[in-house]
Length: 370
Image: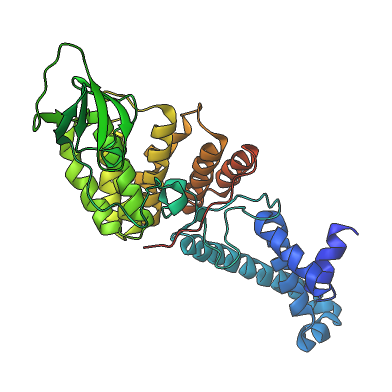
């Protein structure tokens, strides 16, 4: 079937409903086809009018009506421009969902079929899952917070017992000063005292900072998985003063994600911004950490309707090439949304295509807008 035949049938409502819908959907992607459908429809509708048909039967007035019909078509094209302006305004409020990108060649692949809004992808902003949280021997969230310091509670046959355990980040093989840990329980541990060292009951013991911060991060995840976002966030905020900006950056990034889940979007943006400003503090952030943080920050800017602020972090995220294809696909998708919001649809299509080229994305749990 030739394209012009299909267009004529569309304008005269001769096409089956399913075929007409497909053609209309293609017109959203093909601006020339869209203009042709609307203009052809305007002219044919005018030709159907009895007065116009009578006038066209008079040779002396046929030329005048032809000019008039062209004006009608031009007026419809003006309506098209206005309609497209309205549509471009309607996409200024994207929604945030973590979901798979499925190639849809006939339409913009980021459009949500249910409401027409672009979909932002940021896997760091999905709710915490219990399966991802540390597994403890008792049900529910941990009963106490991780401790950075403890004490020796017993000494026997060259072994010391301390009142710190797995909740505090201790693992078998950890060194707590002169004590090499050999057995770990939830809230206490035992270890061999190094030769030549004399220890006493109640002597203080300190947890290495890296172990303590890891314990805090694990417990934040456990609290979030149990639904206690407020306590998880409070724990993270309190621990930020425990180390340098580089050492606590992972806590800051996790805190930002939990802020978003709790509905504190402004706090989430501020914490992501602070983390991004400390990428090069020791220990420096790797490509994956940088891309994930910048992508989430850009997504939050877009949710606020601020594409200008979103451009820098998203473009910086796209420069991190040594990252998982899933993450790169999320970044390219969000750059596509950014381009849509700026009215640059060809650029948006290009970014969506680049997102698809990263391969199939793993489906993630949907997030709810705060």
